[in-house]
Length: 89
Figure 1 (tube, rainbow, N blue to C red):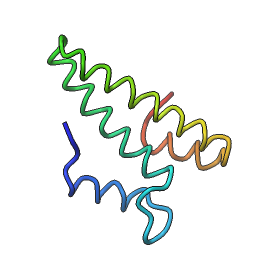
Figure 2 (figure 1 turned 135 degrees about the vertical axis):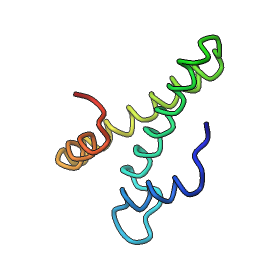
Figure 3 (figure 1 turned 60 degrees about the horizontal axis):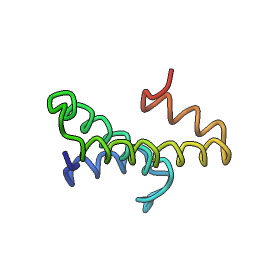
């Protein structure tokens, strides 16, 4: 369920704001989205894994807070990011 180092590097290179960026809001949201998607697939197969479900809800809450921050900071970046990640309709 954890992201591989190679996948993390792909996400960072796709969503980084500048050359040495590894922790901007965009990158954090992209990584959380990837982890949420993987954990959602796991929970569909393992319905009784309640501790992982709790972790999923915590990740969703964290992503929601980061998205709210990004929306307040820059509405255009927010719209572009959710369109790229395919979250929210």
